[in-house]
Image (cartoon, rainbow, N blue to C red):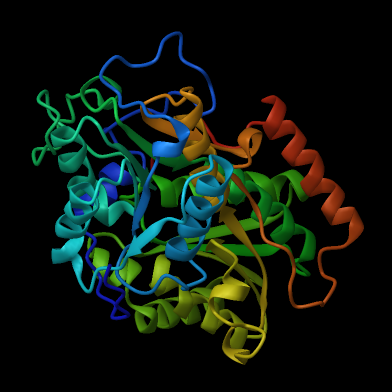
Length: 386
């Protein structure tokens, strides 16, 4: 398989809306929850017969981000079920998604992991045409019509679990991860003013992160001021793939609101947000993966103010899903990963500054316990709605 290292932004409104928890599908159960009966149309195979392939998004496999952690999860899952080392294909641009998926189908791969919401439609198309292959879509919940095909009208009338019984879309409880980040933010803030900048408020996952962040901060300091804003209200390129715009926006945001902790939920645009935070000598909090590692903050002072990141545990969720497929306990449709099944959390404080004290860690641990047993509310009634 080809490995390439160029990067291109291929997200569209359609994919962002359906992949981040819009009307496409409602999460049903974690993939380790056993169904009453195995789906009759879903593929089955002996453990020795599994052959795993991973199609990443554009970039590199070792990006310390979605591609890398999803591939690590596939590696761990393959090892757990006694399968061979997964094959991996990295597209040069978004036009190659479908062909790389087809290459794996043509070479008898029967578990195919595709990484990121950009691949949602191509993954759904392949799943519909190949009922004997399992597909795992990381951060995907494709919108489909009554035939199982991608729905360009966004009515999303088709049921994923019924029409694509060989597809599992991995979704995450962003509000829980955001809540943990909010605990840290309010705990380390000196002036009680903490901020969050999202890419765009049209993506429910972004909104959920920020809603959880606010509740987490207020759980520590009921008098805290939580300021939130979005880089764009309409332009997805600016919202998620424009670090310069993110930095300019954050500089104005910091100056206006006098925040001393800033959480970014804006993809690559958010890298600029973190740069602005570090230049302003305030604390930064990353998103999705451990951004101290993904941005090489140990050697790059532009990101040295990152305290922690609100994480989606990509490797764990992919591994769990592969194991569930092998064990015939996998539930097709959308699988929700949260604190109860190791789906979300916080990255460690890698700087060595000691800002996350034992007392703060105790608050984090208590919150995780509440999330795991269902006693802690981490999102308002309007969860995911701006």
